[in-house]
Structures are given as C-alpha cells and as structure tokens.
Length: 174
Image (cartoon, rainbow, N blue to C red; front, side, top):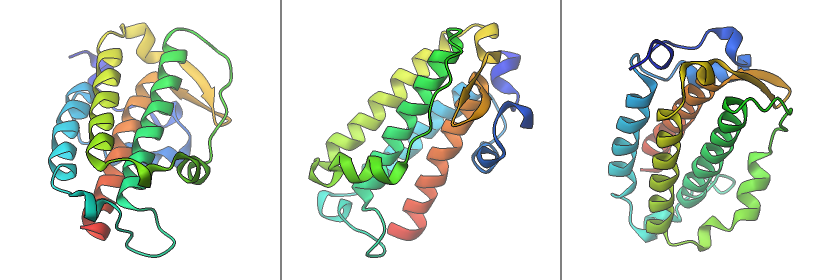
C-alpha cells in the first residue's frame, strides 16, 4: 500500500463535479477498495435474473442492463484516461455523452450474465493496470472533459461512480 493510493486526492486533483463521486469512496487504499467493491457488486448483480434485468423503475429511465452497461462504459473511459495520463500523454481528452453511449450500445439485447462478466473483466483489468503504476504515475495530470485530473483522482472517481450506480440499483430497481 503506497501513500499515494491510500490518501484521498485533493480537491485540486479533479473537477468539482466529480467531488460527489470521490466523497462516496471509503477511507483506505483505493486498490483494496476497488477490489472489495468488485466482489460486493458482483454479489448484487449475480442475484438479478435475465427477466428482471430488463426492468426500468420509470419509463424514461435506463433498464438494469443499460445501467450496468453504463458502468462498464464509464469505467473503460476513466481507465483509458488514467492510462494515457499515467504514461505522460498530455493530449487533452474529450468528454462523452452518457445517454448517447447507452442509446447506441443495445445493452438490452445482451444477455445479462455476459454484461456482469464484462464488468468483472473490465474492473479486473483496471485493477491490474493501477496495481502496476509507480508513485510518479499516480500523480500525473491530464485534461479530460475540459478539466485537469490526476490519475489517482480517476481511480477514486471510478470507485465512487460505480458505488453511486450500485446504490441506485439497490434503492430504485431492486
């Protein structure tokens, strides 16, 4: 456990919008948090059958499949940003429109167990990437969505984003 991975990022390491996600991350090493979170989320997701996975809690809201697909897409985007910045790439990266991504992904046509497996694999790959970063890489910065962000902050944002959506799943869908 390094000092970089066990300390919260400073507010100067991410845009104010992402503070809502960072604040959801419990104290402790972010790598351990991401790993524990994966196990807890998989336990919830594996309790949902295919019929329930198409459920929407309101007509204009995502289905459970779409929600999980959104978590996967966003996790990939945050990880891609983290990898680029960790490697010293200072190219500014654009934002993305989550509703367009979900609308164009056809998640409802995917078997739910495959979406759950995809989330498991994406998070596992991201954990390995983060695990192999050195101290300097964790502190590197880049610009994404027109705001500066550190690699460390991206790991915390990833964890908070996932926690936010799993809580929505538990409280509004299940």
